[in-house]
Length: 216
Image 1: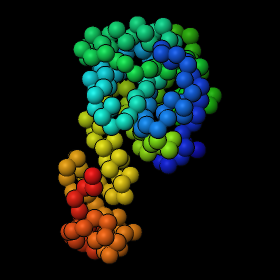
Image 2: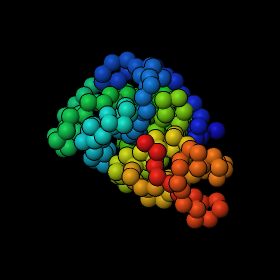
Image 3: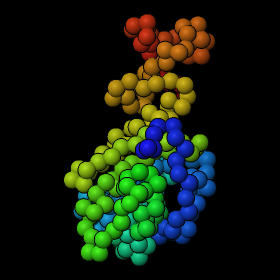
Image 4: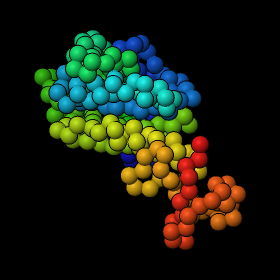
């Protein structure tokens, strides 16, 4: 059974290029995003990690820690970060997990339990390790996305999704294409009376679709 929304994410101890972490302790009271990669020194992944580094201030503003995972070792991670920084002109201050034993990739159901890395492997051998996991401070999975090797991830969308998740934690929902500053949706489980008490004025479009200003 794969990891589902609202499941508690696996806890694990792992080596990173910044030392040993225990995952739940590392998350602490923050939000967290885990980005997975099938191999170091791959072209699409290099551009992606550069994009993550360029958003350092945005993650911090959202109380969000980011961490990478790649099925190579620590020394390769340290060398790869030099390319990441050169390409993106931003320092990748986040840790990268050395998942050369595939424990994390299997725990998050990115690879089957029987998977192994053959000698002389290529990125194709771990191609399904191309996912994004957004995790709440409660250590539960809030959102996941999986991409093929040939399609670079859209980090503007990942940031927007994070904003939506943090907004929905305030008891509302967000409509299609929502961005911060726009109106939000009052859940159908909230009565009109309770909506009035909680949100003040709201617009009723249909009995089941009501919009209001985003709570601060």
